[in-house]
Length: 250
Image 1 (tube, rainbow, N blue to C red):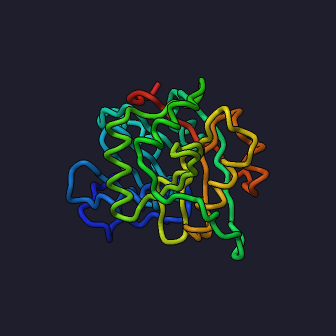
Image 2 (image 1 turned 180 degrees about the vertical axis):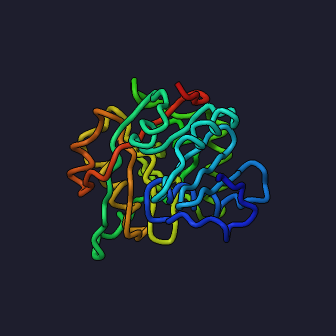
Image 3 (image 1 turned 90 degrees about the horizontal axis):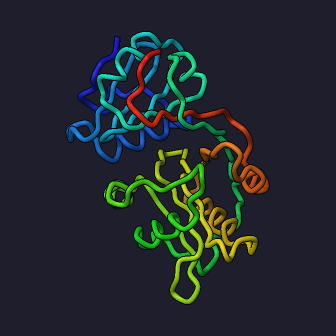
């Protein structure tokens, strides 16, 4: 049975899995008292988190898929994400999918470059992300992006780095969720005209050296950037799926 949590102590999900890291980080940033964020648990270790009109699922060892599939439409979601296998088990209409990749950074990873800027302006980051949009990637609306990340950064639950040239942000790496040992690298971008000069790789290596996490995950869009992340040491971990409208059981 799904139970709405009223304290962080009731959240039993691990912070070391990709979706668990997202849920734990959101709970640490927002708590459960502000109704903007809600968290549910199910016997067997399954956890569900809703932030505004989006939700994420971390499946446990024993999950009541029928209960979850019946419950999700009541949340009036615009976006729901989970593993691809979980989406199949609930027979949900997948809008997009991709690969989760994992890196265990070496303990002696190189130091961040001297010209690396920590937590650059989110407006500058958004402008850069908007410049690199593709058919499979588009930044969210600016206001929720800015409000959420600025709050998480102030609370120590998100972090970003950037590289500037002549005052302009030309590359960045963004961590949108982290726990004690794990982090989600959710955005890496470089100005299109300056690609293949190593700026994106420098930004990623820089943020890894600062965060010093044991597990770093990325959610890679299907068909994009696999070689780039493999060269940095990321390895396949699993697959994710996203539903862009309120999911309904077929």
